[in-house]
Length: 244
Length: 233
Image (cartoon, rainbow over all chains, first blue to last red; front, side):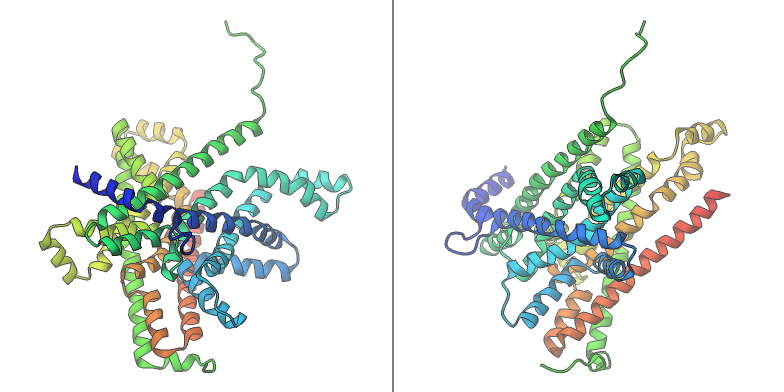
């Protein structure tokens, strides 16, 4: 089968480029760059998302309204547009040229942070009111109640959704290709530009690679969701009446 | 660097026309892929409902592929990859008829169909089993039951998710610039290169995207509110 052997040959000749880009002779790229960008992106977006979620739940309008505006702006504007904003605004504001990696990372933190804040907010609102009341009755202030009672439970329940957002982040890093961030999609395009004759094989390999990574993480999120649901439901009720 | 001047951009007939054409192309790509996605979503749902295990597995694989592979990569696979496998005659016809836009509509439509189909399916799941039994007891055929009893309720349940995914489809139409479709984001880059009014042109385009997205969200909320009224009756 020529398609299969062609694809195999492309992988054999280019696996290093797909894996780490031109590293160590150039910048780190390929899957490694995709994963590092995604992990840093979601890792830095997470604290931001908690702050935005708390601001949206606040009674103070000067906290709530900017957070609301951020969330709606990010939900309504294409990621590509935000990338271009950061791409040209950052050098203008900082006065130095900013590498593509940093541009992409900042964009991801902003974009995923806004989406994740909706997840965190839903997690906080899904907890029964009694949790906050009980924490306050025990003498916690608002901050202490959030810190020690509400957030630990809400974030634990939200773990599967956070993992899904991580999958979205991986998929969103592909847009770095447009501003020449040397991640996986960029590497595949480099290979395609060099071979020229096997575009189907190259992009099929690219698609299947993303599929393998994202599918396993999606499955992990599904497993986590059912095991958390099982844990929250508590141990199975004891059968009081023996079956005949 | 020039001072901020929105009028210099919008009153320039050439730049205004470029942005206008871009916006129209964004609407064409978004509407075309929306229609394709919705039609295909119903087909996928119908195939799943046959209960055949092979059909179930095939649709499951379709949905899993389209949800786990980045949309941009799907676009590239269609435009660079699958296009190269087509017969020469078809390739020529396509390149005479804005191949970029056609492949963008196909790729975005097939991708979004996976999301729409899942929304419809969970909408259908949330309709209680009593509805099926009642509809059959009233003498509805399977199709009549779907058409008059189950689907109207399923659509109502699925509405918020469908609206959210419509917004993301609209936003994803910007990815078509990566395969050379001259939609709004592409037009923005061109105008930027010619006018050097970077800030102004991004501001205009961002405002346009935001307005359209908010309009879709508001439209969805209005439909939802109307359906809630119906539900009360």
